[in-house]
Image (cartoon, rainbow, N blue to C red; front, side, top):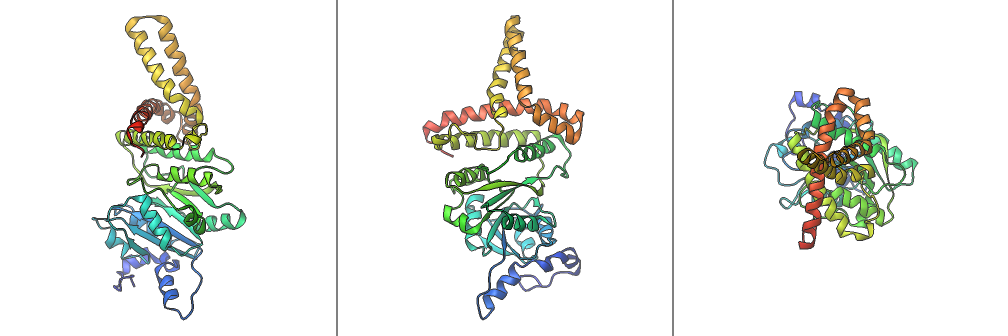
Length: 367
């Protein structure tokens, strides 16, 4: 039986057999109708969605195959116009409509407010959990005294094109490098104690579109003394396909927003409170200088300028050798060599985004 009272077709029932274990809407309704209040679920999975028909059904099916039973799923529909509502009606989840296109930050806040679990687990509709993901999460909270966890993207993902693999391995590598408490909260897969989330006030709703709202929230948690750690075993597949143009556009916009975020909090200027390695940050201006020097050397024929450009280029490669080696170990030498020009393009685009962020901030562009 669907939450709306209609029957699920037999084929769909078989596909979603694992959802019998889900304690979301069915259990929630039972608690509401019971003579006495019962404790809420251990975990509330909170998911903002907007036109998510491409991956939503698989995402919810994967959640339903969890070996952990004590959880609910809260989906905040941010004004979808595709088949999202139809797909949601086939699963025992709590669907909360937003007041119109409010963006993922405000949608997550809304989901957290209505959730009843002790822990909030934020994922997106293009994220596929494993059967033991929620088990690992509950065990991690019970075993440690931390307030939150960030998961990591699995090395294996279905899209094998260079931009998608490059970005997936970048996100995996940069997070697995982190140790101890981190100023991060990567909402592809991130969890926090619900009382802590409500106490700190949730995500900054100034981010009306998907951007760096999770980075800003992670930094906010650190300033308030909230402890978050990377959970290396908490692996998920992020089903996101990038074109080279799309990847570079995303990197440009993130560079603009990260620069403005840093300028909004000048007390953090001396801290590297993102997942981006310091070596990569140093390589951003060096790559621009290297290109300028090499072009000038080629045009003027002046050897010292050319040598300077080559030395700068060698420095850029050295600063990013760790990431390129991670690609080599994962996908081989050919893919690592193919990633080199992508890395250079990305560094130049990030440099341009950083410049835009610096130049526009004094004119009131804060986000």
